Length: 172
Image (cartoon, rainbow, N blue to C red; front, side, top):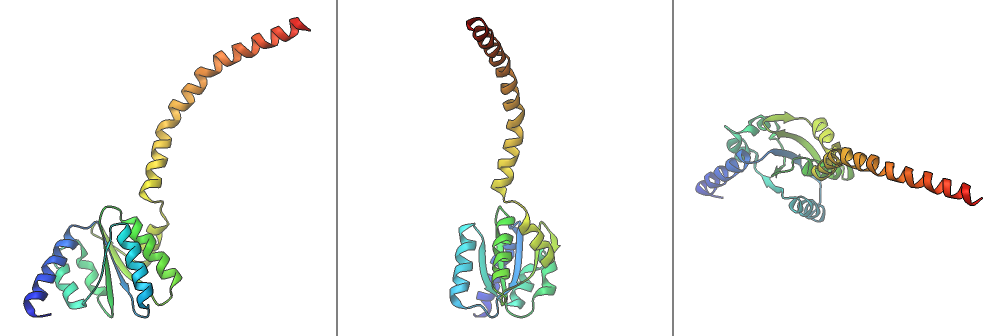
């Protein structure tokens, strides 16, 4: 990479850092190509950009962005995951991958400008996904209506049961 390519890369990475909701750093040392490809595929499926970056270029790109706190973690081989809409999905994938493969280690992350430790990323990964949260919210909103319909249907049902009981008593 010559100087102009590096400057262009730093500028592009800086723009990406400004436009992401969450950024995660990892040490990928010790994973093989097949494992790296699998991780990249899983992250791409949820709309996450994953790439290996040089620490100096990442430090330059992080200046003036919400990811500026990550500069202290730029040591050794560094891979960066840039999340789009859902910050929990990449945290789940990266945490699971770090748990399954000992060589892969999370370094740190940033979520909406707040620096995240490895423990914070693991806790974030334990949260339900966006879809699960939406389903729970819709279920909660639907519960009063369902209960009201059940209550309204109980009155005619009770009347039918009483009339049926009276009819059985007269027949006997």
